[in-house]
Length: 301
Image 1 (cartoon, helix red, strand yellow):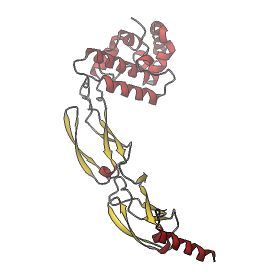
Image 2 (cartoon, one colour):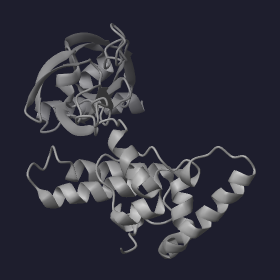
Image 3 (cartoon, helix red, strand yellow):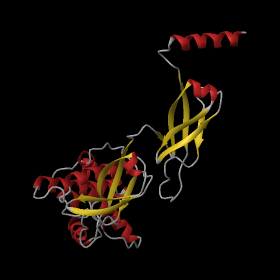
Image 4 (cartoon, one colour):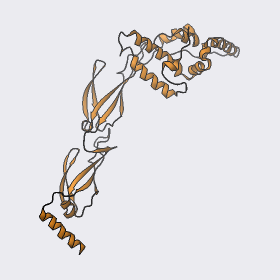
């Protein structure tokens, strides 16, 4: 039987952290999961290899032993027998290989695995051990206006219709978990979970930063100089604003509570910040030019 490079199976380096091992396993397990690849023998075999690699590399003791012996794994049995005999003399009550049993890979193991991690005992224990089903992951694309208010959606995932309530204010990249909607558990184990990641597209003229909205509003020169009243758009309708005489370009106004809803905080909103951009008139008539020239002379005097 040949040595199996579990790092190569999971497509990671030997220096990979526990988190990186877990991430790689989930990615590949989702890709080759039997529920997603029905009647695909190649995918089924690949899934077993991925599970087996994860059983070793996600367990610190297993990984330590695997890294220690590597391609010299055939000598590990002699070493382990010697170690067990020493432990026995000291009155140790540990089982074979110091507790390397109880794996939860789901499925048969290779001869290499069984020879290195406990022989036929590992196979027997793995068949009887319960394990949680695979977690499923999916993405849901929405636009900013669709998440301004709490909404209900029906999603079809793996042939099942799921009624989902989407709370107002859900953020781009946010992930929610729905328990029990993943893959089937093994040997009576619990089902996996469903993870939904939201992708939110901003299809508005507002800039969103956390819960606050930002917008630029044009005002004409005359209103900026003389003052007046303008109508501006907010996310949930129009409002009228008073413009003070002598308003400068870039002046900012805050509309409290007119921003974006705060996730799972009913009635709580950010603020809306309006920045005035003074629009200089163009295509002036001769009379308008004449009046501006007179005004310029008055200011100089």
